[in-house]
Amino acid sequence: MRNYRFLQAALIVLMLGGGFCFALSNVTQVYAYSRSWWRPDWGCPYSYYYSWYCPYYGWYYPYYYGYYPNPYSYGYSYYSQPTQVQLTLNVNPSSLQSAVNVTGAGAYNPGSSATFSTSQNIIQVSQNIRYVFSGWTGDYSGQGLNGTVTMDSAKTVTAVYQTQFYLTVNSPANISTVQGGGWYNANDSATLIVPSLIVGNTISRFVFYGWNVDGINGPPSITLKVHMNAPHTVNALFKQQYYLTVASDQGPTSGTGWYDAGTQAQISASTPPSPAYGISIAFNGWNGTVNSPSSQSTTVLLDGPKTVTATWRADASVLYATILAIIAVIAVTTYLVATRRKKDVTTAAAKEPQAE
Image 1 (cartoon, rainbow, N blue to C red):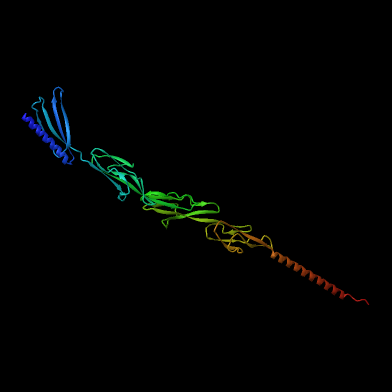
Image 2 (tube, rainbow, N blue to C red):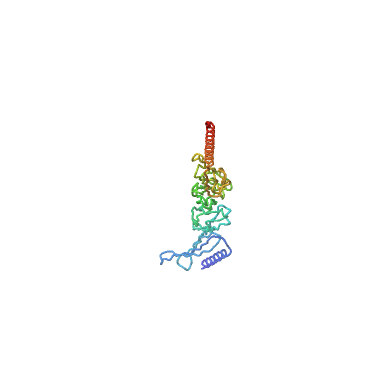
């Protein structure tokens, strides 16, 4: 009986000590108390457990209750609460760390699953610069906005954002859009293609003559490669041209063709050959807007499509002069002949003998 009371008191002290330890301790170890006994009528041992937090290891010892025929045993088993592991989430480039909302970082129990995510697929920095989510690196690889890892150890996962620059391509309003403008990853190569070197109709057109990249004139080739190391602005250079028609119904002309808008075109009309003796073709001026309408050789300002026509007139002054000369010759000849005849008649009359 005395031994029973002594063991009972020791057990009470031990239990109170464990409770006091639990109340004062903030450690993460688990202390388990077990009680088991043999029940012959059940045919197996029976046990139950009490657990509390305590910073020391337990021990085991057997003893018997003197008044109870079955053996009892008390033991202590030490368990350690799992040490948590850390999930660290980063953003690349690091300058976006405060701008990107990446969730899921923290401490996790070993073997548990950790889910992380970013809610921002595109981060617009300016009109021509942005970052686009391209995937995760580190202890997880994937392209989705969400991911899950098993926390069997400390893990670090980085959300990677790709820098992109915008390529602005300009061309005249009535030109088909030049292909190749848009967003590009940093340091990619953009290829621009002009759909056509000449765009227009039979009297007005645009002619491609080169590129201008960020204010600097480039090559005249139909394609252009641009290194996208920053936002760029490219202008496809086209010049306006107008068609000038120089017409004449009498002889050849020069100056017909395409001219750049705003330039002066040199034109002329050649005098045609005489159609008959004594008749010549004389220049009579230009129909249309020219700088010197009465001159056979002049210039035209190409401020739009234009047609100018050389006009002519027949000049018969030589014929008339010839006719007058002939008439004069005939008249003089007739006069001279008549005068000669009259003189001859007078002379003949004077020579006839007088009657006695």
